[in-house]
Amino acid sequence: MSQTKNSNSVSGEKTSIHDMLKDTPARESINNLPTNSGASPYSRALSNSTSSPAILTPSSPTQTEDSTILKTSSRIENIKNWSISTYKCTKQLMFEKLGKTARTHDTELESQIDQLRETQKKYLNILRLARALTSHFYLVVQTQHALGETFSDLAQKSPELQEEFLYNSETQRNLTKNGESLLGALNFFISSVNTLCNKTIEDTLQSIRQYEAARVEYDAYRTDLESLSGKPEGTIGLEEAQHGYELHRQNFIKLRAEVSIKMKFLDENRIKVMHKQLLLFHNAISAYFSGNQQALEATLKQFNIKMKTPNSTYPSWLEQ
Image (cartoon, rainbow, N blue to C red; front, side, top):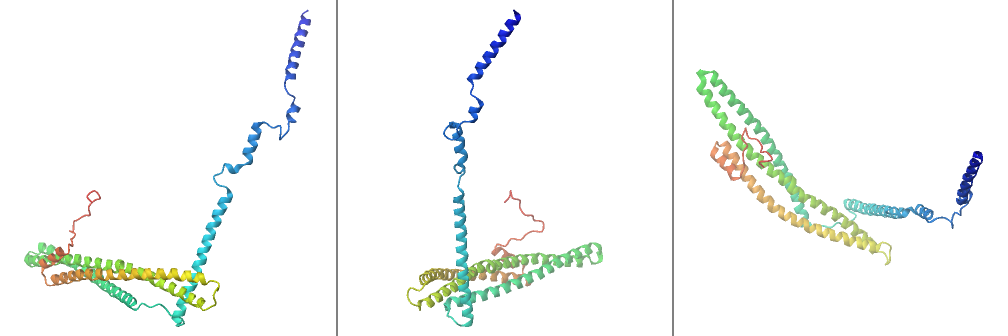
């Protein structure tokens, strides 16, 4: 009986398992699903997402290639224009030196430019000599200071000549003090003339160099236009030559006006600065070598020249 029951139970379990397997789809049916029309929505979404990567990227490769091509073409165009302009300007300069072409002359302005360059050259010579004088005089002042210290030391060690040594020590100390005042005036003079030569005048000369370069370009394009104008109408490049000529003519006129204005203001500023500095130089030198200490101090006060004391230190950034 027990064996019969066990066999019945086993067969019942087998029947139930077979029933469960019947409800599940066969593996062959899963593998034989159609690939296109019978695909699920999820599989279609995956296939669509993988087949269109351009939607996820911020810019397509074609846009990047177009921008690169535009940049390259603009650079090539700039190099082309620069090469043409350089060739024309070089040709113009060579023909001017050989006397084969005419150049634009502004007699009044060019004479002022030549005079300004000559003035700068002379002022630079004054600056060089003033620096040499200051350097040599600084050594004299240092020697006087050392000599005064030596006299003072010997006065303490030589009682029989103490009075004479003290006189000379005091004289050298006074000369050192006045020499330091004169050095302050000379350094102020050098600083002002250096600013005038290497900054103020140089700024105007930079504008003059730009004007001269614009003059060469204008003459080069003018000569080119004149050579093309003599040919029949409809000549290739005539319209482009007219455009370039007009553009460089306007730039030339603009820079010429700027140079004229700058030179006018520069001349007024130069006279004002040099009048003040030459007066300072004369008064300081005369007062020192005449031994007039009060006049030397008055000169420094007149031109607002502050002397640094031997033990003075620069103020900290908090004090500034």
